[in-house]
Amino acid sequence: MRAWGVVLGLAATPAFAQVIPAPAASAAKNLATVVVSGELPGPGLWKVSRGDHVLWILGTLTPLPKKMQWQSKQVSDTELAAQAVLLPPGVKMDAKVGFFGSLLLLPRLIGIRNNPDGKHLADVLPAADYARWQAIKPRYLGTSRGVEKFRPMFAGFKLYDAAVKDAGLDDTDVASELVRKLAKKHDIPLVDTSYKFTVANPKQALAEFRHGSMNDTACFEELLDRVEHGVPRMQARANAWATGDVDALVAMPRDSAEGRCTDAVTGADFARQQGLQDLPAKIMQSWMDAAGKALAEHRSTLAMLPMGDLLAPDGYLARLKAQGYAVESPDAQDAAAAADDGDEPAPAGSAAR
Image 1 (cartoon, rainbow, N blue to C red):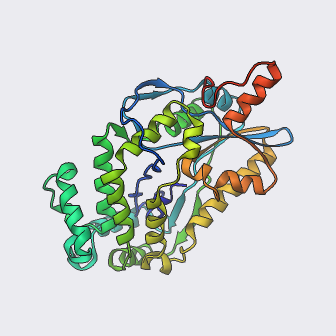
Image 2 (tube, rainbow, N blue to C red):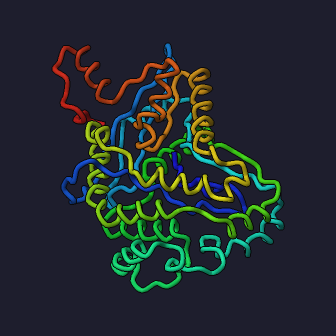
């Protein structure tokens, strides 16, 4: 899930905007740092089924190679045969205000990323962390002073974004964008799987977020680690996704920053006051409910899930298996198809997509 949007995944509201991107999970080994380019297929689809009803899942990833052109015949053919497309998990906040009310709230968004009480990073970070920040920042952000007012987590994400671009990567979710475009072109229903909650008083909620505390130092430290040491691993993971190397993707553990940053958000004063402490679980359950409904109602459905959440030991595939659905990886499907044809199975991750 894009749990990074947990703060203000609040993306569907007039008063808030999603300001936290979804960083890539890191790889276990330091592979070649050359970023692939050109037209590439990405991984195959995971097959989740019960009887003759199938949910096909595309594992998505960001960042990806900047010059990569994603093209997957398997995905497009599957989508065109599907009765619905499940959008990725997320969170949406409904603020009970009209258009003019939302305009009045806009000035209050100014400085929402900033530390309360006009504090700077030097005032809120441990000395060792701030020294690391000062050493890394010039390479990616130059002499920018505005970021010094940011809360540590937001400063860390800004640094991460700059490092991604510097590494020849792009944080655009290419696969999801193309799947959405194809669905709209052919009138295939797009199913919103987001967890939705209502904020009765958005003005108060904004004040709570702007002035409340957030223990995001651990998140900041993890983001610094990723920028300092994880760029080659991000590139390796992007290459594995682009070339459809499922074995490599499965072997790559999730990024430790994700849990730290999610904890910072859900433990913040704002989240506690809005009753959002268990938001990641609610986001997952909302998607699981949508998936169960789609499997019951449609013979074929296409879904998109962030790769890290798809493959995690406690992630979506594990939950689907626990509910009794049959789950087959792309490589398992390739092997089964080869066996049916009487051929030797193709090497893992080598099937054409």
